[in-house]
Image (cartoon, rainbow, N blue to C red; front, side, top):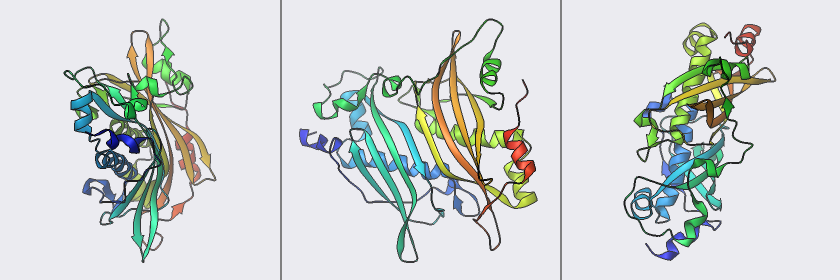
Length: 319
């Protein structure tokens, strides 16, 4: 690889547009594509930016022992994406490792945004690779020893387990409205033979919302059958703050922090791994959820929460 191939990393450089399509898996309600798959497209667009800049993931790993890691992504989702839409991705490098992403689709002869977001990338020094070449100076600003090096102390909130406490009492005790779900980091949540990756936490965010709604008696199926409502997401963010490793147990909390104008709830997910007597904070996420009408002439239109839904969303969790 020539030195000039890396110049784009630090420039205000745009490699796109790139045509893409959402995956069939993501059309769970009607032919609308869920937020997770929109964020998958943003992730893939940034990965493709690296490939078009002659920095493919395989090359970075095999030649320099570097694992590309998406450590932070935040998106706005201003319009619905349909399963047959062709998406044009625009990716611009703003600073080393920091990108803006837009996903565009054509509607009645005009391009509209279905995603506007920012993605932060790091190149992690992998321990499992064989002898590698020195890292080129042009990408050195992106190289870190681990995910923790990409965050500030204000992003990460480790918790001590005191005598007589366990994971549940510590995490629910922190916020009595929180819902707790624990899951094992299987190999398909990970990459580079080691770490839970960005998309693993994105999948966890989707699942913990579903489990929370079931726990509160307002499951997706029930709201569909009884009211014709389906959850929709207008804003989401997933940030890695420390490494979590394959086959560790990820203790995940989800809590509704605010209700906005009676039509959306702002919620937070936090993920922890127990190591000794400490709960190590590994990831955090935020999501803005509402409900849309799922069928008829009003399909896709936001609806206002009723009192029973508000009570369910904001109830206190019992220890």
